[in-house]
Length: 141
Picture: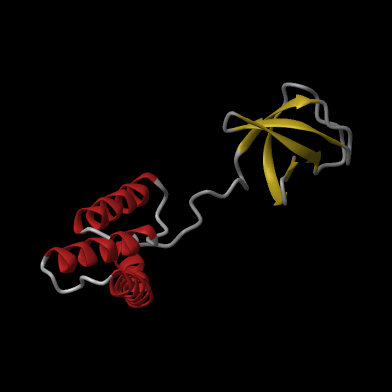
């Protein structure tokens, strides 16, 4: 394969990595393709089979050795707290909840299945607190 095709492949893979949420997989394959393109342009990897072996080896080895440290390095430091817990949030009943029954509530702009956690029914329009979450069902009191 000619050197400029390797560079195009590498840039394409880097673009894929930039467009997708952070798995850091296409990044290493893109870098591997760019390195093989540079080696091919320098005349150090003329045979197609050598180019493919170099691409595969460079990509997989760099992925195995550098992905974990890169992900650890880029994570935010500080307090690790559950910032997205729904427990304690206020939900609005949009479909009446009978005592122990199932209905619908609105929370953060989305409709959720809900159960009444208390002894009595919860009327439509009632603002209650989420007591617990089981799967995709909110228990509201």
